[in-house]
Image 1: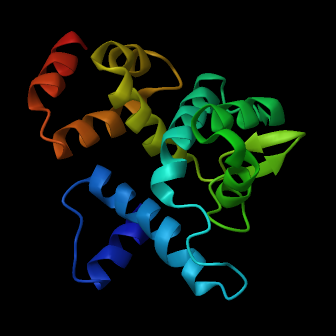
Image 2: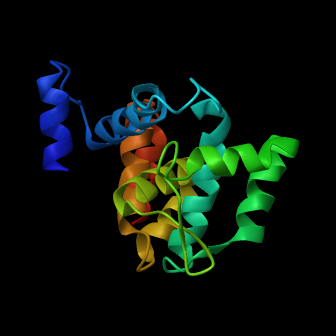
Image 3: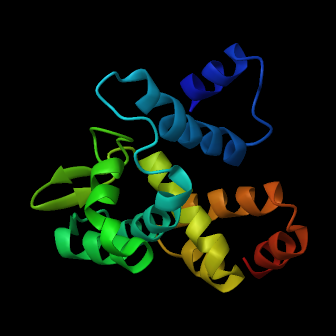
Length: 168
């Protein structure tokens, strides 16, 4: 986290919160990293198309204790949102493009747990305060819940933050 903060300070745009920092890092992975690679077509799969599916996958991956996600599960989650572009989405999320998913033990995992926790936090925000409180109480979910609270604050959903914190 410290190295990521230093990178943002070097750009003269310090993050206002941890959620802001991680959102910036993911945006850079999605927008800048592929553009720097000469072998990648620009914006083969836009981040805003991938993000909802990756959020769902990250949340499921953490809930399952980091066990590899099956190929069928990953395809199904991308297919639900992207229909016939599931194969392109999996390639885009993988190491050759964004690097958020890696193949391991016959399935997929998130190689950078911190980013998975941030993505899962965004999924918890979408699911609402009950899901956030449940995650915070679970052994796997404390960091994802913190990321969700940070994201809610960034989105100025202060009443929901207060409700969740009170219930904890």
